Length: 181
Image (cartoon, rainbow, N blue to C red; front, side, top):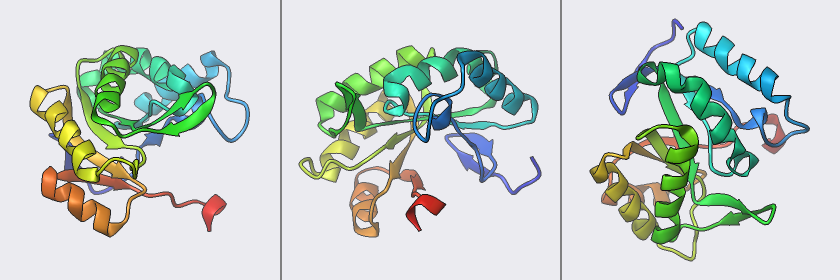
């Protein structure tokens, strides 16, 4: 990839990565597993180094798909995932309680077949929990070595500033699509 690189969690990454959501979740029927694996393998072959997954995507199936395929190149990629938004009984649930975030991390590490997530996003802010409490728990994940950097998804500038006061935020993900314009 010939775009300007940015360093996140000690890894140089281009500004665009591969969002893996559609390989197991949303916007229609996901492709067969063999085709999804082929997409991931082709992305690696073409030099993609940033792969984005989440607990929510396919209610864990996305991480279980992405992890084993990327395991052989794990040292050459930036692997991201997200917590705080999951599926319970087939419904989306926002839960930013520290104990829920801890459990989500352990589950994600297992599904991704890795001992560390390079960039771990709070997928949605649970407004029943202070952002400081959620990010405080995620900061402990960084301190433990299980996460290298933190990100936020779909937050306001005010919320970002509060989170940044607790722990450095390496990335912000905001929806930008034809669906929401």
